[in-house]
Amino acid sequence: MAYKIILDTDPGIDDAMAIAYAIAHPDIELLALTTIFGNVRTHEATANALRLLEAWGSDADVAEGEAVPVSVPAHEPSYSVHGRNGFGDVELPATARVPHELDAVSYISEMTRRHPGEITLCAVGPLTNLARLLERDPGIVDRVRSVVVMGGAVHRPGNVTPVAEANFWHDPHAADQVLGAAWPLVLAPLDCTMPVVFTPDFMAALALESPRFGEPLADMARFYTRFYRSHLGLGGCVPHDVMALSWLTVPGAFRLQKGALAVLTEGAGIGQTVFQPGGTSSRSSVFDARPDHLVMVDTDPAMFLADYMRVLTAAADG
Image (cartoon, one colour):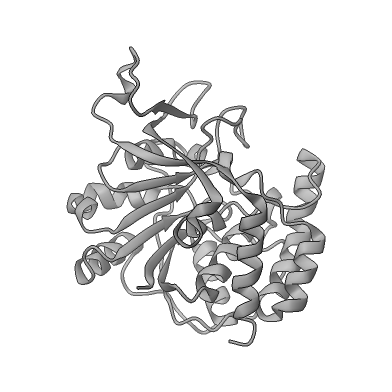
């Protein structure tokens, strides 16, 4: 049975890489993109989502999400990482498509009522939409098939502060709320994303073997790679957001730990992910009554890269 996916996203270059994978994979039925701020502002994310779906021939819905975080002031989008338009300054053709009449939270609520127990929410941006969803529709925890979140850093340093990953830093209160909810959740933090690098050679091969997806992604990746080279000395870029989908389709590529999770919401460590392994205890009350979730703590890069190339290449003529 195909995975029915709603992808909560802030496109974003690595978001585009994930969206391409979702469209191309034969076992994924992409129902919708719900949009959020982060890499760009929410209205820009919506425009980017519509353009990507048009360019790649998908009829998935686009539902616009929240524009500001739950409690903290909004940060400036990550234009320095993804370019002023979110796509490394690569311009995609305009589209006449418009967003769904329902906002993101209402859309997710409605679709999970139509398909109870069937929909997986893959969230690859700040978690404001999911936090508002929990507030407005607490029964959602029993209607989703699963939730996969790309965000946080468990055993690794952060990427916007020494301890905080970007998605959780943009809305730490939302992240803490989502990780504390009693729904079946898997976290894909920097621990599993940073071992994987899309090199220029890999992107060139992708453009050659799968022009429909690979050519625009390779163009976007040039900007993204310049950022990673200048800031981390990497010879390529990291496809963070794809991990939230790959967990569903190639779970053998990842090593897992289980435990309770929380996110710090104030102080110098704001946005930091804290983890208590399952079966252990501590004197901290932060984990009281928190459910255990699965955490992807490492990745087999060769398996991941082979799967990504195979999926997009197989869809090249689609």
